[in-house]
Image (cartoon, rainbow, N blue to C red; front, side, top):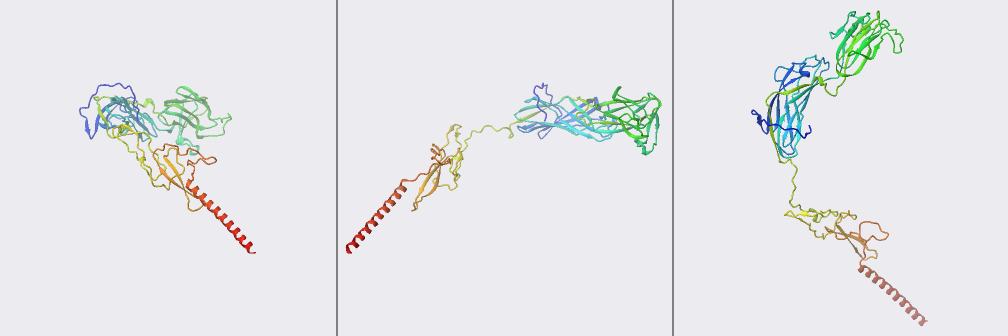
Length: 473
């Protein structure tokens, strides 16, 4: 999505008189005349007829889509800028200006690959359409107007092309002779080459790319060759096919198909390589040139065609309403506090903040009545925001060892801490210490007293029996 740019100057609105509206869309027919770049290598001036389709009614939140169909108006065509063995790509970029409720610009884009190979001037295809969109985040009326220019770029595909020595694009000075039908074991490209023994005899080749290689035979009878790129000494400026890299003489004879010199990293465009024989009587040879084109990030500026609006300026207005896609407005209706109702869950989290009443005023939430029934699934460790109170009871079942049971009572808003004091030596569990009821203690004490009285009564009875036995004896 093209970013909206602030500060775009507005112009007068011209509404299309012949605009056809269909179901919330409008079509604007716009003609352009293109010159320069691939227009110049084609028909010179290329005429386009385009149709811009935009929505006329949107809701906030709907995308503002702009689609733009492209086509040739007549027989004029863009043409390939050079020989392209692997084809290339056409990129089209438009401009759509926004004024009124918004101020900015969209940049619809589209691309299409061109199948290769093709020669210079071969007609090129256009993408069927280009498009862009913007997000609508507020209401308003926006005027959409196609820009005054379109840009059509050509990007060549990466390639390596062998150009044989007999190609018409290679120019030779006097003194060169063609040699054809060479033995296949020599491995010459197309089994032929050009050769000279004349000092300063030269051959030149103009190519389009980012690199070039010089291909010829390695042979002990050959001599040094000077190389220049665009009239300047190359790097390196000289190569000797009769020598090894360490300077020793080679033992080869007619070893063809050898890349003797290469250079990469040229700026993409048109360049000229020139080779020149240095020594009289030594062989200067040319088998082929290998032209390199690397993968380009950006299209070459020399290939750009600029298209200018030639039809009557047109515009269309788009209404952006609230609809259902906008940001929700604040809701002042009362919201019932469902957490105030008691439930079996022992970990409720009520809303403690005031809630609006039916008149939009804030009123405190009422506290629910505690639940009379126990909750068997209550958690003994409530979270800090919980609203439970724990009540502990001791039930005696006729045994000196009491059995502890736990009853949970829910309240919506506790007014005191759940644990006021932690017993010394006890763990912080979140529960209040267990309390033993006074009635249980009284029962235990009464039982002990009855046991003591019984024991004393038994002792007295035994003594009386012993006394009676003594008197009889």
